[in-house]
Length: 66
Image 1 (cartoon, rainbow, N blue to C red):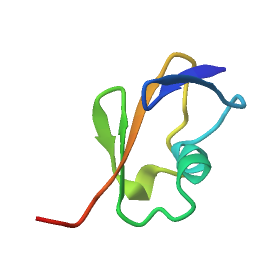
Image 2 (image 1 turned 180 degrees about the vertical axis):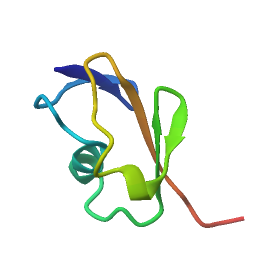
Image 3 (image 1 turned 30 degrees about the horizontal axis):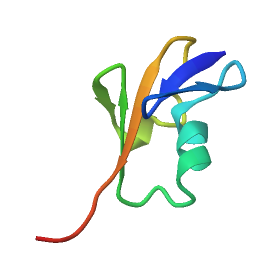
Image 4 (image 1 turned 90 degrees about the vertical axis):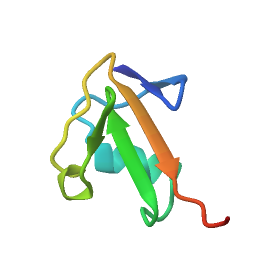
């Protein structure tokens, strides 16, 4: 299936979860936030939130600084 991940069309296996997508992008989930179709997904739900064809997922990393 195809999703849009951080603005890029990406192929994923059917029945992928947010947690698997995060692992593709970031080796450590520390400081990571995920939005699925414009809604923030709580980290506790990453393993149970399924991706669907056409989903738009944005993964962002918090950066320290000032």
